[in-house]
Length: 286
Ligand code: NAP
Image 1 (tube, rainbow, N blue to C red):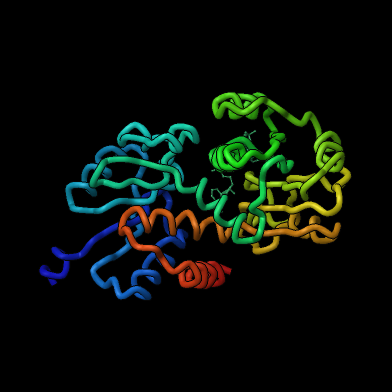
Image 2: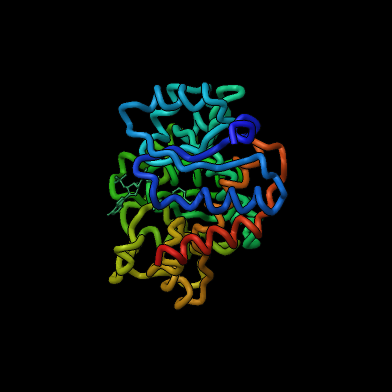
């Protein structure tokens, strides 16, 4: 037993609360599928007031790295060396203790999942980002790098302006939903993208929609909703009802995890295995 512990390579996720994380299911399924029996992914509840101590303890106990989730993503920046992506996004979601570096794999998770859905030609494509928090920053960073044209709609427009300024993207804020719809509809070129980066519509408030019912919703859009519970949000229904396409955020969650897996192990993980395990874990919650 001791022998096994000594040779075990440990990774995990820190957050508070952390009970509902599905990351252990998908990472451990990937380790199993690859026969990596000496690797284990844990779920670690870490209260905010002991974040620094907790990170030191995990490193001292030989953890290879951790994923970082709410509420530690921004605070963890202080205790590791953040890379350019983490600095741009302002949050760390993956730490490698061997180098004490932190990155943010949400950017890659989002962009890889868009590509997996065939949305890969982003140059000059219009993208309306709803929200201005950490997830929105990841989306804007990735889309801006890929050459998309970005407009942001956020409850607090000042926060949206700050996000774009921080990311070096020309500030373009939609003052209302009608403006957003008109902008998406006019001279569209490639099919425009609407990305929901708010928790509006997430379980248990699945009846909500960030796009108000009374506002015009343009047809033939691609909606990417970062929410994955429920599997189809009201916003996604709206897109499909108006002849558009809609994808939820489960693939992003899996692919950000896959990127972390690769950083820690150097091994390409089996995405299909991780996706099936993540889906099963979500189904179990319902
Ligand atoms: P965050 O930093 O707290 O930002 C939340 C954003 O949503 C803010 O811009 C906030 O507006 C807006 N918002 C919150 N409640 C709202 C409401 N009732 N009406 C309108 N706007 C509201 O959160 P986050 O980390 O960016 O996460 C946002 C969502 O993305 C969450 O649902 C999260 O689960 C999801 N997410 C998914 C993945 C994935 O892998 N699929 C990864 C990351 C995040 P203000 O700026 O005005 O406060």
